Image (tube, one colour):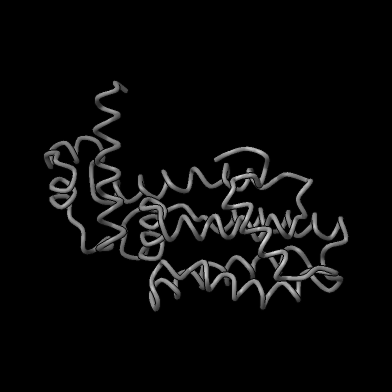
Length: 217
């Protein structure tokens, strides 16, 4: 694809993401995307064929970056549960601040009214969480009664539910605060021989400094 066409396609994608995040799928039209992007409706249809195609492209674009995000938290020098907590703050920050991430999450929540099969992000996060919990068991950081796979399913669903409800009731700016409350409540059930507040503090520091895996984002 030529550079000019790529730039046009990207500008349409970003305009659509802003509108989907702000107004939802039903509240956004192709004409809205055209007006927001400064491109013609014909240009929108040329690159994406339909509003459903735009929605699918937004979700795929953002979810495609998540395996790389999970891979950043693979440094074995950092305790696995600390990496898990840090990863959750990274995702929460994206859900609060990144337009494409917010749009992808909202579109997935509205998937029943979108005539396109949207990818499911939860299998990836459940697998990543299971892996970190299993590593915590191997290193002796996991409480004896915790089973990695079923616990991972519960944590992932609770995490995204927390983010969704916090945004709806308090606004996205409070997601990280509620996440701290949640981890301080949850970690005592998961970890062995560590102070939950210290684990959360170190994890948040990793996200702020970008050193979770010894590399920048």
